[in-house]
Image (cartoon, rainbow, N blue to C red; front, side):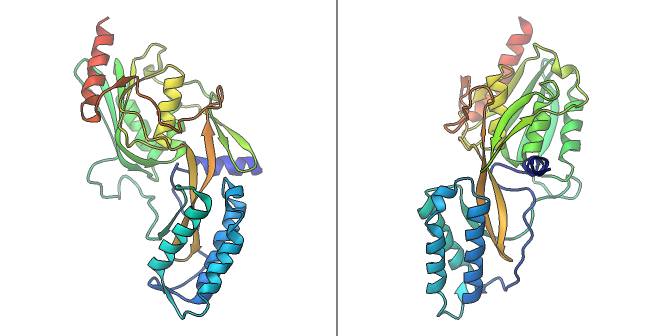
Amino acid sequence: MKKILAIALLCFSTFSSLAQITKPTMISGADSLSAEEVEQTLANVSEQLISTYLHPQKAKSLDKELLSAAFNNRNQKAISTQQFISDLRTLLRDATADKYIDVVLYEKTRISSSKDRNYTAPPVTSKLIEGNVGVLTITNDLLLSNTDEVIINAMNSLQGADALIIDLRQADETNIATIRLLLSYFFPAETRIADVHLKNETINLNTIAIDRTTILRKEFPLYIVNSAFVSGSWELLSFVLKNQHKAVLVGEDTMGHTQLSTQIHVHNNIVLTLPYAMVTSPETEANWQFGVTADVHIDSPMALDKAHELALRHLQQ
């Protein structure tokens, strides 16, 4: 049961935040914190560093430091929430040397439906271009309540394509379930695509059974278009497809962010981001900490045209 719950958590996790944020347990005004609230918030942070943080050895000194920080505020009637957040972020990053730890002011969850969220551009678009080449474009965050439906509809619209380009240059955050769904179009069900290392255990991430289409034929030409700003979950997509020789990567090397993180309310208005898992290849135990390397290097603004050129050239052979 414990492993099932861990897998469920992963399926809703991004590489920089959870799609759903843990609910708060404290109530306070947004502008300032009392000394008691500061002390309680620091205690909550300390607890999460012990129970959740992927690298607890980095945080061994923080129990004492956090209590000391709380003591220093006992004589204050109140402290600015923004100042407290800034000080706490600096304290945590200095103590752990972990740039992926963050503390932010909570605003609202980013989950919504594609039908009720206002976008400057849709998060997923699909079209056929010259040569019957399909293009699947991901833009901004893909953290929708109906993400599976959006992806499946887009992929179904490209069934008749002779080649496929997935354009990730403007992709931002998504969860690992979305990546697993996309990879399931290119591998048989239950293919082990990654190992996810938690604090105390390792979980195998496998593809799922889907309604597979002609897009999956063995020699289907597939191209992934990346920029230097592509990170996290989308890097997993590129990493797996490249390592399994399923796709040609065109554009720039990606950012190199291999850790899963979760967001936890440590106060009604304060959210702590903590890395809690690391992803590696099941075959080599390697990851993309230095970025996923492009097969064809070209500046990202020209990468889509280059991928189209490669696809046309392949189809003409």
